[in-house]
Image 1 (cartoon, one colour):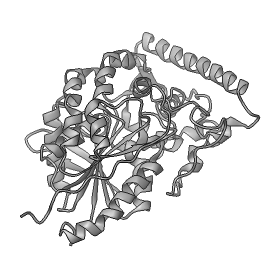
Image 2: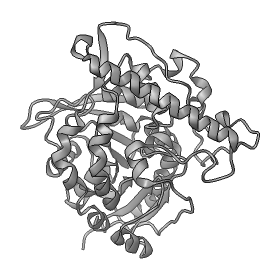
Image 3: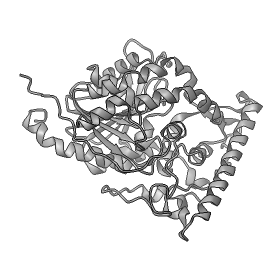
Image 4: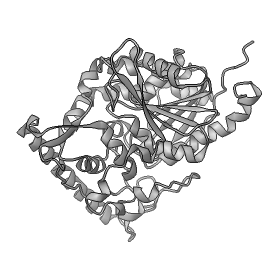
Length: 420
């Protein structure tokens, strides 16, 4: 009989929030409109984790260019290092925070980087002692492993296994993944690529919705600006466009999605596209403000909701010959999109550990997950006032969820010999 029995799943937890359209949120990242899921103008209730980032989340911090300045990774992580690949050229870029008898391995979404977990890592470390590890998958962030476009489900699972073999120390592992990273987390845990998994945590990805969204992904990719004059402008755009809703997190994470290029390499068409995109967003913002003012109960919703962001700033790069464009060509990964999500629900329910699904809203779960949730096979956690990037928009809520899980599980792990 094994001394390390499977970890029992959490009991089900239901939420009462009425979500926005899930497909639109998945593609665009907008949260519920202020007042849509509660009294108009009322700020969301604070979680039990004191969020030291809250002041930076408020619109008042951005009073010009300084409010959008990039924040270094060292504000949230303790160290950054490289893990040389074996059998391939290049190295994986890894960030770590804290130390402890439990590891939390974080997998980012497509087009993002490990820095999308920065705000969460800072709060998680404050909430519960543990070792937090986040790495850039191939082709993303500062990872240089070749081939950079080899993003198949199997290859990414092999990469997770390799990272685990190099950085883990035999401790229980909570594997959390967002979007694409959530799918890879499930396949890696179910496939035995992660040693000693204690839990798999999936953020805002459900097989049925993800598969439906694939038909619109190309349109979404084409709608993004092709370049930015500066990182500050990119941060401002991410907030104006509704991709992110946490100013602090945007200031850390957006730089991981961008790389500098020569201005001469950017076409005039691309420059016109950026100007048009920002103009359209400003027009949409004005329409929303007028509608909100018409339904206002007299409170100043711009400061009470915490989701309003200031107008985008047009800051030129320090080097006028340099602009910033996306590090990742998302279109190049299209051949792998379907395989990431096919069979995800059944694989999630078959993971030999605790299972946690965190969603920005529950408008539909597929049949397998609906039955599984009713049978108590996983914990369902609904995060309010967030877009698609839950770990960035509401890092405190997610940190509290995982901190509670680890704290409650330690007693069981000691009894079963998982922890010494």
